Amino acid sequence: MLNLIKFVNNIIYQWRITLLSILKIQVDNFQYNMRNSVNINSKIVLPSHPYHIVDQSPWPIALSGVLLSLTTSAVLSFHGYPMGNFLLLSSFILLNWGMTLWFKDIITEASYLGAHTDKVQKGISLGVALFIISEVFFFLSIFWAYFHSALAPAIEIGSEWPPKGIEPVNASEVPTANTTLLLSSGSAVTVTHHSLVDRLIDWANNGSVATIYMAVFFTALQGMEYFGVSYTITDSVFGSTFYMGTGFHGLHVIIGTIFLLVGAFRIFSYQVTNTHHVGVESGILYWHFVDVVWLFLFGAVYFWGGQQAMTENPWKEGLGL
Image (cartoon, rainbow, N blue to C red; front, side):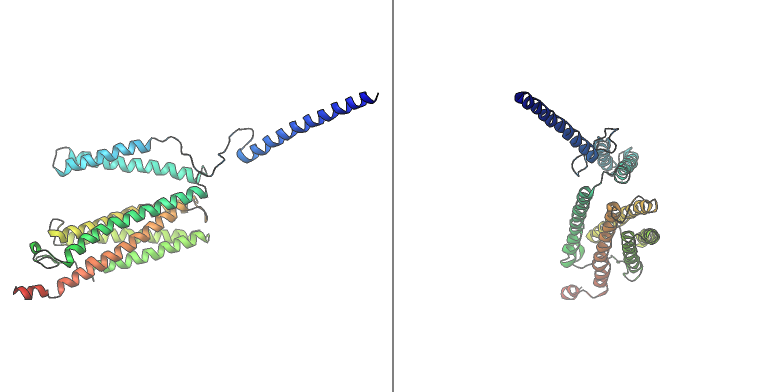
């Protein structure tokens, strides 16, 4: 009888252990599904890491081909081939169209799919910072060429800076107005950033609109200045460095304006929050970079270069010219 009782107790004990194991497995599965699923019934498992594994996209390979076509057609256009200009314009249109669709997908991933986690946003911010650093060195090469030629003018350009026959732009006219516009736009875009962080959406919208207006006005004034300049990009190294510096800066202003325009639309559409606005923040950082580059251009090319033209060149007295 005692053995029978022990046997029954052993069976009950084993049954309890088995039942508890089954229950533990069910509880673990339920907790895993709760952590990694949007809906348990839908069986949509979320990744167990904070990174964004992008889906297959046609845009990288497509835009690579467009960029190849753009450079090839640019060479054909520069050498005067019959279809060069048409191919260059077509490639430029395709490039902008493809970039728009690609950026639209990125905005969708950020705003509606929730793919841009804190870790992804940090990676994007780091990428934008590195891109701006590369742009710094691009403009550094232009300033290097300018000062290399300005501080020790070659005899081929008359050993003077600006070269003989070059009448530089008066720094107190359009360049001063453009400097005021860019500095004011930098203040306005800063208001936009702080208002967005403080959840003052109306102020953020007003700051964005004011920045865009001043950016467009700056571009228009820069174009008017080009029409009034008496020299071209082929007029010695002065013309080359002037148009390379101000021209590429103007191109960056246009790109930054589009950047801010997209950011303003996203703020107006409530696609960003006070803690999730890395795209808008990147555009603001890019715009501040554009501001700083213009200050160097104004000081070196317009102000210092114009002052050099107005002062008497001591080399001319030594040479008896």
